[in-house]
Image 1 (cartoon, one colour):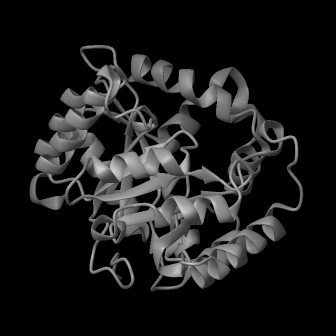
Image 2 (cartoon, rainbow, N blue to C red):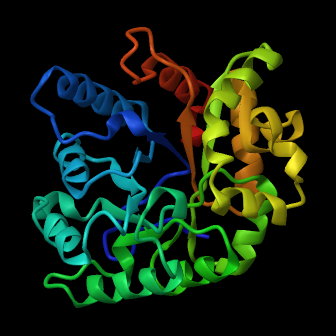
Length: 299
């Protein structure tokens, strides 16, 4: 399997960083300076891809591309309901041509409870992709990935994009997604990390995040398909659900969990660190350093 971005010669690498704290277009204020410094360090550490989390805008993505030199930059995930395809294509076209080749547009249909106009998500995604193809210049299949959980959206991802970027999934889902995508499409799941060797405390930290997602049917339906029960959703998530969805423990344990996803069929794993950094800015730079050291040449 390859994780090369078609037509660009770029690769995602085996391990990347997913961060909602990079969700900003303000690269010239104090917060922007902190983000620019963090991005420079992520490049130096050797991570293959930076995923901009938290429903970024096209302008957010353009700012991160402009603030980096060599790393692949991807949106994880831009909601198709928040920006028209024409607006998105125009924003991509505005990225410096010399840097545009290392940008990947991650697209998703979001969730019904969060989107008033939510309807026929699969058909809406097909129409959005058609519009991106028709734009001038186009944002074609070789420069986009889809957030996909179910088999239908996974097959669309394989046919109309580089592949899939599933969020909040198990290794079992990764194996099923690889089968649905076929051998050649990119599979780049997100994996949330809690660097804490106290397992009870790590699970408690994970629950602070998971509770929100357990209110969204797209995720809970997927977890039910994977064999979990409604009881696993109580109290912010059962121990077995947390252990299946998160990487909990020290950096070595995170590396081992990441390998499980790669062995299940992933080409790339996007790590989201669920801690605050020493400055409280939401940029866990110390954790990113610790993980990079643990992975070494595997990045």
